[in-house]
Amino acid sequence: MTTVVCHVAKRVETPRPIIAARIVNSYQVMSTSDVPNWPQDVCSTGQREEAVAVYDGKDRREILLVRVKAGKIEHMRTIKCQHFCGGLVHHRGHLYVTTCTSLHVYDMADDQGRQLYSDETGKYTVNRCAVSPDGSRIYITNYTCNQLITLDKDGTTLSTLTHPELRCPATPHVTPQGHVFVTCCRRNTVVQVTEKNNQQTVTTLAGENNGLTRPCSLCFYSNTSLLVGQWDDDNIVELKLK
Image (cartoon, rainbow, N blue to C red; front, side, top):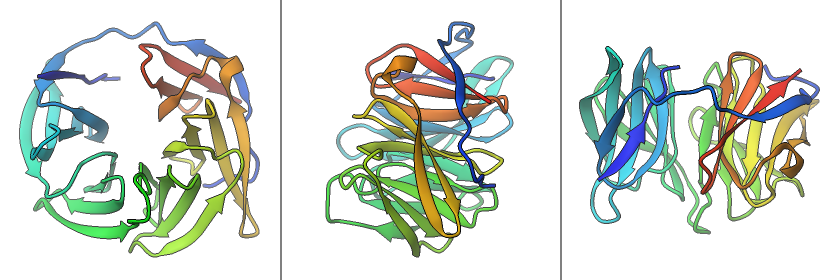
């Protein structure tokens, strides 16, 4: 068994500079829950409710829906999938699931899923995803080809961004204000992607000098900070934004 831990806790024209970076040490583990090997990703689906993507290395492919009640994690139900469950994002009652080579969307009202996008040309062509606040754009990282791909809500490709700073893009994240950030695992950076006059620009906001080592997950926190999770590292790095 593997343990998953849940913490209860518009597009812009110019990047938001980093003014400080620090190792987060103010959090405490409130509750843990055993899940089948291996938890791949977790996202919030509502107040104190989470979804966890699980894959056991064989035939078990599912999404666990849990909630935090009285400080304890409780299992609510399970969505069975016919594909590998990697990245996981929730938006307005729908779960977006990446499989490394395809993107699926599930309606949480009836657990029915459908494929939105597929790219079988490489091993990690649909690594992780993020959804814009209004749901009109879906961002996926093509780790294999060093690209950020933008889809519309129906899965049609709107743009494909290739840039030297987008080396091994791992996880995209869109803030409630529409800021687009991406972790670049092999480059040890966090970048921001902005768009003006249909032209996308990539700006590196933080790197190794800010304490980043293979950043692989990203979360916008408290309207002023990015929380960055790292591969094979127990530390979470907080990047303070202007």
